Length: 285
Ligand SMILES: NC(=O)c1ccc[n+]([C@@H]2O[C@H](COP(=O)([O-])OP(=O)(O)OC[C@H]3O[C@@H](n4cnc5c(N)ncnc54)[C@H](OP(=O)(O)O)[C@@H]3O)[C@@H](O)[C@H]2O)c1
Image (cartoon, protein in one colour):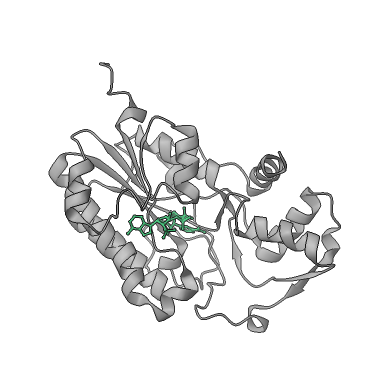
């Protein structure tokens, strides 16, 4: 393979300043990284100017403020639908591949068994509708693109759920956490590793789900965080979503099936509990 054509040299990460983008760059430091300040994916000229034939673009850019999206749909649709459309069209023109991230929020969240990639969508929030519009735009503009839906992503830093629980453990004696939302907590580092594997596997199905395996309520995740840092998990108290109304209703059931990922020969992401243990150990260093 001539110099400069190694997979990581052809890798382009958009939204590189976000959770998944940062983990991708930790694992593939030679990838070309574009934070929002360097590349706004809604700008067709700017996007076109950075792409080369043979590139593999992993689009981590998104408007992810789920509650704020309810009162600012214009920004949500710009980041989550217009941007991916621009990127997908530019990838097709440049002869680049695209791996685009999407979300469990494209589903209604009312199922009782894990969502498969082909299950009917039905978002109930502005964020979910904007991400679904992004999926459709990616499919229209770059039919060979991979759409990877994930859920409940954390790094254990900044203000994500895991970091918030660590902070609240210090600040309060007890915390109330909902028991009636169930999903698969997903360590951004594990997701990034999965995306890099997919980058080397262009023949994989075009719509895939990637989360850590297993499922839990937020209450159970919070208890696991407390236990993992040596605090008493009984300091986490159960409550319901009705006690914490938010502008965007949260899906009750967000579990995504990893069957298609596994059947494609891609390495299943490990159980969420062991991923969380590693994230907590890393955050403590
Ligand atoms: N976090 C989750 O729990 C979760 C769950 C399911 C799916 N996902 C999906 O996974 C992907 C990555 O999520 P994440 O957690 O890494 O999100 P994140 O931490 O919010 O990162 C998204 C990044 O995209 C940037 N961005 C926003 N609009 C942009 C634009 N027009 N051009 C370029 N960059 C832009 C943001 O910059 P600013 O911060 O400056 O706006 C931010 O750095 C997204 O597609 C998201 O929808 C996430």
